[in-house]
View 1 (cartoon, helix red, strand yellow):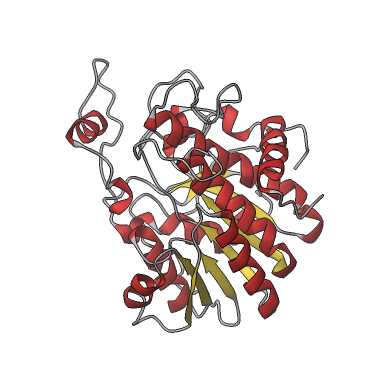
View 2 (spheres, rainbow, N blue to C red):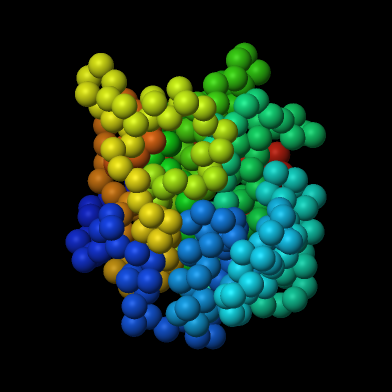
Length: 325
């Protein structure tokens, strides 16, 4: 993909859709001998991603902020290794990445799935807004730290959200120093997930590494634990124009499907950097279309190559990590 052009974003007609499950997507695919790493792989759609990959024969590494809980949730899944890592803590991320690199295991698939949503204003010890720090900067540092053991031809999947519709990157005030809005903060972090995959696909091209971002759909998981009744009503009830942010929910098994499809589908072999939803390439949506939540399509600011390169440089400066410096 050209440094100066955005992805094509023409849907492929994959044969799968919104109601496909991860198991259906992986039917007939043999991942024996492959190693995957899945963040947030012990709750919500993450545990279903891990189960599907392991059922297809993959070994799966699962870094977890609460490794004891992860070990219990995945106790019946063969081929899983749980480790300790807190995405919101750069020291913890570096320690985990260093341990994986020291172990020498080659990673064929990396799925950046963990995330937090719409939480009250919280900051890291560095003063970073917690949603951007966890959803984007934690994964940025992790993938860059793991780069020495990410295999040639690997795929890196960034689980974003239709929530990227809420906000682009707020370059004038990324840390909300002038006033916090939990939904704009979430939207900014989800846009960052898309831009990160776009630039990673470009810089990883020399080694055949492809990166994709995606909207998994709306799923009832603990991701929404910070939502109150007003938040839920705003998402599920029509506004004055009749728009409904979340018209339906997927099951966790359906929510896991686009991530495993992105990680394994041969249809995507020449479509690196694209944004996916419902097990297909998503269409463009006008930037002035309102909404977030389950809003379909991808906005142009989330797949802007110049924005992606700017975000990468900014992230590298903040974290002090850049495998491509």
